[in-house]
Image 1 (spheres, helix red, strand yellow):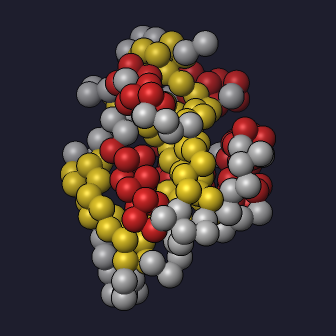
Image 2 (cartoon, rainbow, N blue to C red):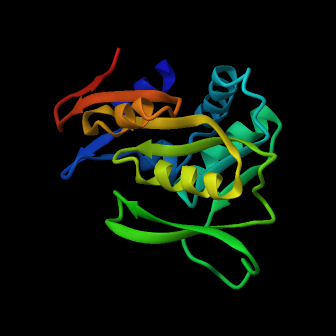
Length: 190
C-alpha cells in the first residue's frame, strides 16, 4: 500500500534492535485517514473470504482491526494479554512472546466470542517474529474456527517469519513489507 510506505519513509524512525517507531501515525498517535484507507484495502484483499470476525491482540492492533471490521461490517475481537475479572468463565488461552516488549503473555479470549462457525481474519500492526500470529491461530484452532488469513500493517520481511508462516499455509497480506532497514534507509519488498 503506497500510502503506508510513504508514511513510513516520512515519519518512521529505525531504532536499535530492528525496532521501527511508527507511533506518530499508527500505534500511539493514529492517522485516522490512513487507518480508514487501511481498512478499505484489507477489505478489498479479503473480499471473497466471507469473513465473519476480525481477531487481534491488544493493544496496538485494535485500531487497525476496528478499521477493518468497520469496512467489512463484521465484529472485532481482541485477545487480552492478561486474564482480568471481566473475562470470566471458559476461555481459550495461549502464550505469546512480544518482540517489542520482550515479554511472554498468556493471551485469552472468552469462549463466548469465538466459535467453530467463525471465519476469522487475523489483523495486527507488525509481523516480526510471528509469535502473535501463531498464538492467534492457536486460539482459533482451539475454537474450531477457520482462519482465512492475516492482514498486517507492516511486515519485517528480513526476519523470515512471514515467509515461514506462508510456507505453512497461512495467507498473509501486508500493507507495507520491509525487506531491510537501517537508520539511513528503508527498503520495501517489491
